[in-house]
Length: 312
Ligand code: NAD
Image (cartoon, rainbow, N blue to C red; front, side, top):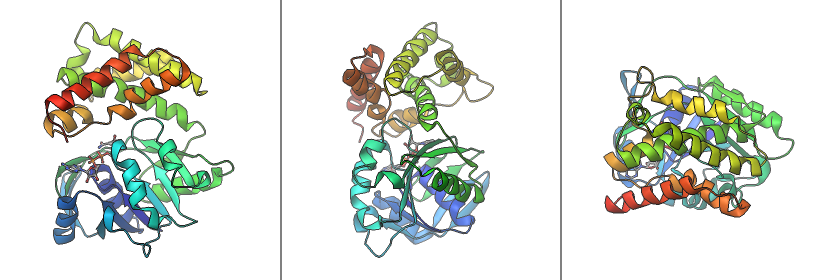
């Protein structure tokens, strides 16, 4: 299958490498010139479960995408704030038959994708795979993961199942979900608590969990997500979601990790995806007349921190 990875950072590189190893014809597309140049010159370098590998994959700058490179499948892996520009730039790649899969964290990306892709070709989901950027042309890929995905267009269930099968053939462990909006909101509750709070407080997840106020903050934020989700027909099991979120505090599993937003902003001075997580809940809250004071405040705090640190 001809697959384009639109956004070849940490996650895009992981998917590109695994799908190419699985026999697909993969092209990487990215907007970071130093990264594109490094991969063109020396290949994509990865520490893949402890083994150093170099994979040669074609890569092009998103501003240079041309109509000769139609794809059967485009997998979107930008940061949320880069998504609209990426879709604008890769318009020439989107043929009538092209399917587009979005696995970004956050809520409501379909509103952006719909501007460029017909509904029946859009597939959304989320993933438990992880990846880290080490520098231009270099990524770190550890552990296992999974993917859940679903069609947005009516009657496209079979296409979604086929897409999951293609990803699984390359070891990506994908499955069809008949309630993807539930999974997306559930994962967004993890990101909407751990990411913003650990970033503003400059602490890892176990450290956050040890504070006397963590539980109340998690409960309030998850309830705000659940109230907004309900207006969209998604009824979260709030107690289960809170337990799921708080399992991140466990120092013997993942608690010692800093969430990716912390790494982006505190370590690398990069802008965050807060507008597409807590900020999305705030916007939807206004639309549905639901109060979301903790999400509003956390979004403002993270933006203030971005400005203090001069994030780009
Ligand atoms: P990423 O930051 O590694 O890559 C996204 C884009 O930013 C790429 O185009 C990349 O080239 C560019 N970029 C990366 N570092 C840069 C730098 N220093 N300067 C300039 N440009 C830079 O993002 P990601 O971690 O691959 O995440 C993509 C999406 O997947 C996000 O929505 C994220 O929340 C989600 N996600 C990430 C993980 C993870 O473990 N990384 C897991 C699940 C979901």
